Amino acid sequence: MTTATSQRSDRLPLSRLLAFSAGSIPGAMTLGMMGVYLPRFYAAHLGISLLTLGGAIAVIRLSDIGVDLGLGWLMDKTKTAIGRFKPWYLAGLPVAVIAIYMVFNPPAGAGVQYLLLWYFVLYVAYSMLALSHFAWAGSLSRDYDERSRIFGWLIGIAVLGGVFTNILPLITHGRISPADSASVPIISWIIIGFAVVLMPIAVLFAPERIAPVAKKERLTLRDYFAVITTPAMLRLVLADLFLVLGPGTTGPIYVFFFHDAKGFSLRTEVPILLIPYTAAGLIGAPIWGRIAQKLGKHRTVQVACICYAITQTILMAIPAKLFWPTFVGMFCVGFTASAFLLLVRAMVADVADQLRLETGQERSGVLYAFTTMTQKFGSSITVSIVYPILAAVGYDPKESAHNTAHAIWGLEMCYLFAPIILVLVGGSMFFGYTLTAERQRKIRDDLETLAAKGADAAEESLVGPSEAAPAAE
Image (spheres, rainbow, N blue to C red):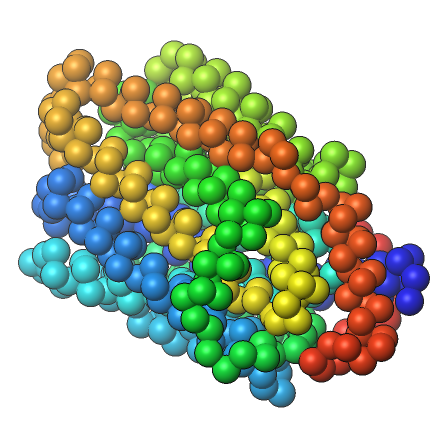
């Protein structure tokens, strides 16, 4: 099989790519609420202190890190008539529906114990959905550039969920707002509705490429160590951690910052200002994917890191209460940040090919489990560090609180410096990165040669609908 022929056969038609990508919308909506609005909901509406809330969320996110490795291992061992990752994606749906309802609809007097239980269940559900969906996406094509296209659309379409959540105040004339505690239960039903419609559509209309099940019956700690110490994967894990930490630092304090420091109204302007940030990903993700086809994925991430530092600084310099300049600034920051998630996930698929060639084993599930872990670990660090800092400078998150100038200054410093420094450290991890497009294509050719000779454990096949001819974008 020639490279040109394989690229053509690996190109997923746009209609199926859109159906596949739409399945990411409910998870993106849930994660956006958990990262920005729910911490404030529990702090302001239920009266849980910032120190207690930060500690609780950190415990939850750190405690289920092992769940991701276990799920990744089980996914790599799975082989069914509909694929390896689809069953786990579907299994996550009922778990997510129950957990979303419980987290978004806490009973009167719910405290930390309630939060610990149901936040944990929701994170497990998210792990099942995100891990299976990303690993499934990585299996859709073996081509270096096609993976950038697939992940660009996947992340871009997911952004629609965040946009929809934040545009609710506009389309409901202020009756439903994610920043309003009374609207949180309503939003839970909206997310559940999207989930039960869009996720089955993704399963029905998108194929899944089936690679051989790992030869070893049991994955040992030594195997985990070998995976994580693969030079390319180690760089990806470290880079992903810092690239999560950067923008992730702003999430838990977003509402506080734009309401108390920038002076925007809580019910309408604060949610609306997240629209350009999230919507920018819909435009930015496919564009960064195309740029990566020219520069290479790792170089494109580094360019995006520099752009992020510049745009975040400009956003901070915009005077308070200037809505439209801030609107544009949020779009620019969101555009640059949209490169991080999609390109790192696309590079993980390249590492999976490398390990498959070297070991004869499929390890996509475990590899994506490590990136899911970095998301959780990074998010837990941001909450457990930033909230105590705010508490130390005297910041009060309650809706009727009056904060001092010193407390607001501490809030501003947390929002500005930490994200920039962390993102630049993440970009520096790609100096010396060697799994380039040329090397990945050589790995892919070697895999195809082995498959043609019958050297693979099993011949690859497509499970689900497919089309031979490519669709034009």
